[in-house]
Length: 120
Image (cartoon, rainbow, N blue to C red; front, side, top):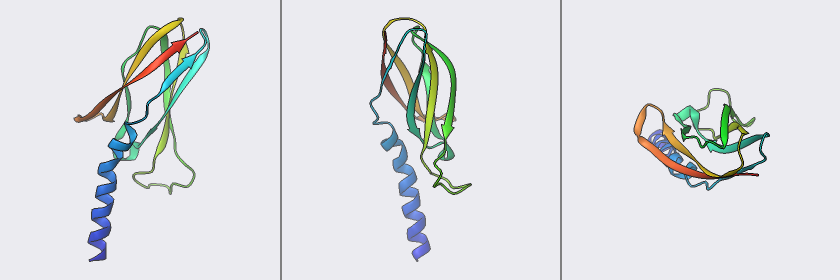
């Protein structure tokens, strides 16, 4: 009986992850010609991560990677990570970076978030 309760609790936690991750309101500020980074929480072991939907002309995309927390056991599913996007701030101005949070293979899970961009 306890095993079934644990399984149901685990499923409920996994289903709540997308809702928690998409409520991060972010701003990205940088200086023209310099590197700028955006750090967001994601859960790639469950398939949920951030994807770039629309990149403004003020930014050049360089890379994206995940930093797994040290306290997450190897092979564990559902541990939150920090996903870091690195850009070059190529042009001064105000813009919006559109991101999608969800599973790349499941368009029904996608939620669009907009990040305000200010390059000085």
